Length: 508
Image (cartoon, rainbow, N blue to C red; front, side, top):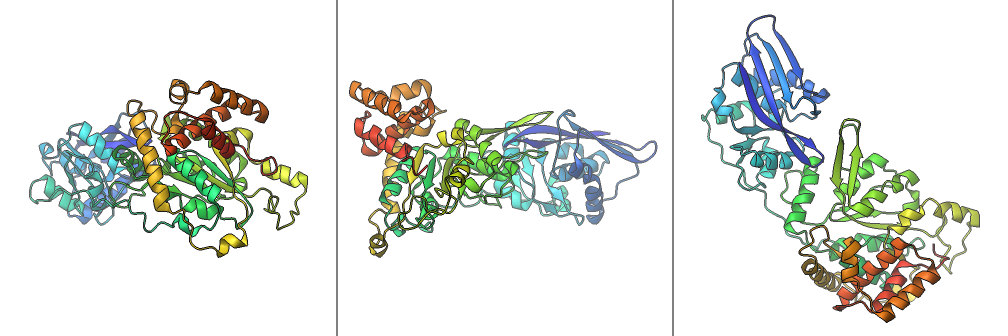
């Protein structure tokens, strides 16, 4: 008897259908064969499933069992096939009527004692089940609330294999799981910019970066407050829109980092250590998984002490910074992960850190400084919109009271500017913020008058700016104009944008 059950496999942050077929033949020598490009954890399901069946009191007759995972030309990985395999074996052996399991999606790992354990990627699997018109999805209790985020698809979370079978037989009534309570976007626990003494220019640059989702590089001596500034950026960012929240939640579900929570409502803030590998940063592996840049999708990726990262590691950031995606290619397939994040980086001007600090003597030789700065390639720096000098804080600022520039006030201006951009780009789904402007949209929304065009032409000529730098100056100018409530770009907007983009030669 052949039984077919529907389940799914992950490819990137999406899922594709897998038909798990079981042929249960009571003639011939008993055997168990699994085909369909199953990797190690899937092949090992046999031992877990048979032990779980015995623990739950199910006995299968001796038979030649053939398991096929179709389509057979696409690799299957992970332990989510344990539960559908166990139920399919019971249906093929006659313990469970086939019509009782037809139309259900199943996903879950089985312990040797029969408990159903959570697996990553249940949210995209549930979205696949809904698109396939499934009756519902049966998974681990920890995953059920995650699957319940998909509207129109009942999600059930039995604790054990025995409970799942009794539910499918109609002998036990399980209530469908509900989505977990959504956490409000509360910024009260995030450090406030009012705690940062001085650095008004840097705060202004960060406000511009947050308003337009621009990348920003903070450069200054040790103790000037670069890390303090960066870690306060989440306090001024707008909450995730519903579609953005679903994108981020899918990524965290595939990475196994959702932890039973509901939709991610706050923008991610990822801070990988400088020893991070290329694969950990951008994603990959034998069975590609999202990296830090994808986990920061729609949020912030903070790289402290930027030159301490490996040069090759930093250079792999070029694609996501430019296109907002990461494509991991393998011999048999390629996977694309979303990676549209705001890069915030911090660095010292030299190895000792005091090249730009008049209060300290720099002990680095010109050759050491050149080698230190050469760790950052020109193409990478060109993709960072704002280059901000963060000088040492004078004693007078340290003794002053709380800064009048608070996160609440900055956030109000950022939200107002983002609202303008949301309305402006409502009909262009590929462009959400000013940082996405390119091509015809850039010409349309950053149109310059005669005086502004002459001013920018002279700046490009004198500063020897590249075409990419020219484009980014226009984007930053558009954001500055939005913060000021201006319809068109003026010379003051262009001048401030150039000041945020170009540093003095001695700084970088």
